[in-house]
Image (cartoon, rainbow, N blue to C red; front, top):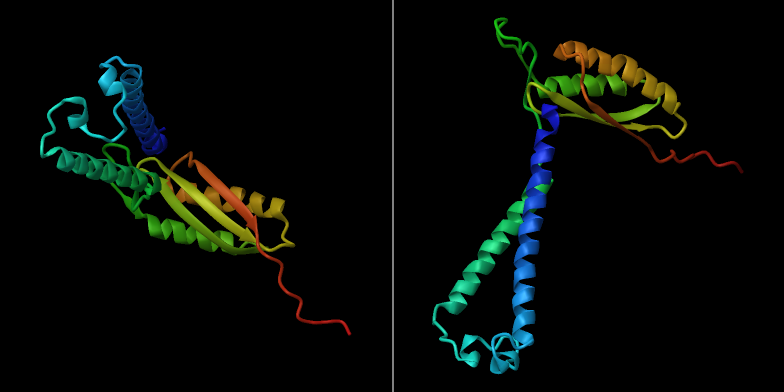
Length: 198
């Protein structure tokens, strides 16, 4: 199950990140609630929000605004990194064809395999275009195949040929018994009939 490791790492990072943000917000909310209820004195409870530490009798260091700005920048950078990780796709550049020890190492460029699949699927009757992408790792790849068919195509026949011929040929080329695949078939917009009946 090495092909799902990247997805699991991203999901685990999301859970830890959300848990940390939730903990920080819970602590901050608890502190503000305690302040408002007078746990730090009546004077502190009546202080307007954002008045600063000087309003409650605490020293107000000159670096405080710069510290807050630095924390805000760090939080913004972490948020940008999180967004980048969400959109990252673990594409495979090459696939190891013979991973067994003692038999050498043969690699297949993923672009060649993807192109062969797209060409084979595109030749199926009713298919308008196909796009294939190998994801995962070089030793445990998985395939995502997007197929656009004509509005009058026999979808069941297209699926049968893709599964029985194209995917079988790709597994043979990669020398793998199992290739996890997601096939998404969508219908193209119907062609406009230019001939008008008078």
